[in-house]
Length: 457
Image 1 (cartoon, one colour):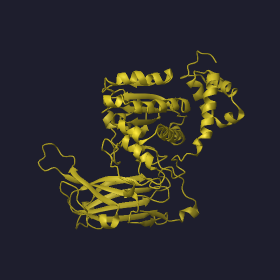
Image 2: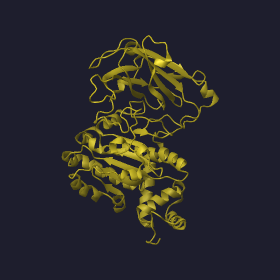
Image 3: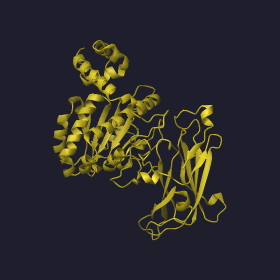
């Protein structure tokens, strides 16, 4: 293949020729396993050198077979597997955070507590999925204590498989063309010199990057490293020595002035802390939940187990409402009266806090922050809406919409919501209903399946 081919903008005939030449070097078994896109990605990764690309793709194929990668429990519309990290703005899976579900092991939960927060957050201007990592908030010294290198790589493989099998197909469908790469934003806000020079963590990073380049080549369209402090330059000199030249060419290092992110990602799809307008206020943790940052409640597995309020909903009886009283709270957490805590086990007060009050306001309006926890044993998702009404009022006009309708998939893992209700005596009404056939992408059940009740707890 001619070295003059622009691999980023090949003609159809050039791409077809490169694919054919590499297929000629592969066995029938490998050829039948690989799509043309797989062949092209590995060709590009080795600058159309068919000999090197053949070695690379054969090693990739052997690894996938030996590691049973195709059998990984990846969240997709037609199953109930949990998402591997936070997700915002896709229909293949509903917006979600990582919680202690049956399919989420304790090792992943421990790792999540040390990572600064990662989320696939909507799309760029060309329809590519955007992954945002708050790397500056990683508790670096705890990562090697919490996870082994192999454990970290396994987690990264699960992320990549979720991208490949679930998000990219949805993005391709919406764009009406093949979308096969993602945009990555690495936010270094809060990073320290100590973190950047922590040798055990850097060794883990080096191994993970090496595996990523060998096993998932050309899945990254562009990476933006933002809020990079001056001390990052030293670490970057070392990190770039671990990367292929082509990978390096796709990475842009930006400081606090990262307005050019908006050239890649529209403002309504970019979190406000990165210069966009999105806040994802309907989800605990907002756009990118982070346990180390403290914007997302880290509840233990026991908090989701054996919730005492249990009901059945179904496709013939699709709705259920739960009503409980709320009472004003002071400046700290206050135990709630029955049935809020004693009977339900679903709800609990976190704190009260000022809401949308001007600094000069002498008596700011205060709100109660309330947790709602729920899960289902099956189904294709539920839609949740929450209302609040003053105690003693019979008029719907007095009610306040605390949480507008949103679709969740608690059959994958428990859902945790954090609501703001007025800090007054009243009634909190939580309404659940089974998702309609046109909500989300989960397949609608067969007639016989639709007769089976769904356990909501």
